[in-house]
Length: 356
Image (cartoon, rainbow, N blue to C red; front, side, top):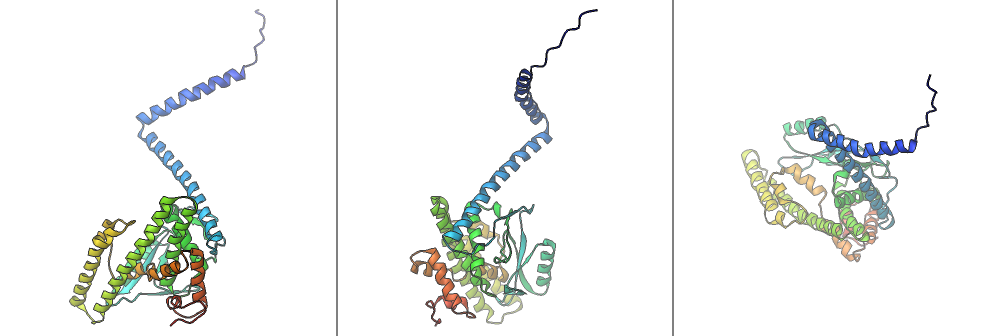
């Protein structure tokens, strides 16, 4: 019988090195072959790359939102509370559908009433099927209706609004402007005065985004925010002129074919402006989008909610030496010292004095 030989203990270092070589060579080789010959493998690999990109982008965007939030609180002195301190992934690209409606023969909005915010000329629906059903019902009753997607909303600071995944689909400038817009609602919101509330927030959002990016040395996004604010003011004037012309036509108590002809002429004029000289003068909007965008009374009302008397806010900003924090304070003083009054009328007065 042969003598029993003692087996040497394994050389674990050598084993680990060989395993490492196999992993570095064999695994990539197998993956390359799988990608070459398997459509499913290619699909999964592409999905993995895209998902990794999304996750990285979300983290960078989330950091941007936190920076904008901090700037808004520290430099603009807006009330931020716990807004945008958490994140929620909705798993879809649209948060809710917002419905606006108006009589067809008048620029008279259909309104809804809610606690705290008061009477508002729109309603948000998380149930998209219900939104379309309500819009169809209003149209059957003879109203113009307009449904549009929304990716963000505000509870005015009453709840800790999370940063939603739908907001992260926007570019950096629009994301920051949206964050500051929503935080502006926490600071100044007048019950049942939606055009003022939204237009004030639009002003603070874009001027605030411009200031934020300049503070970070980001000249490109700062210029884009300033350009978007110029565009908003141009569109404000156009929608206001269309509203004036519609009001003039509707004052004739038109009905039937005469009403439809007048509407066709005026909405045709507006589309020609949007796709022509006015639209092509815009710096941040693609005028070609306006060629197929819906146009009716409800659209006019919805567009003007965010663009009403924007140049009035700009005038106060100029008079405040382009100091946004002081501008916001001046607007607050004028509005809060005249409670119950039309907030736009309050803006024409000096602080602490009644408006003319």
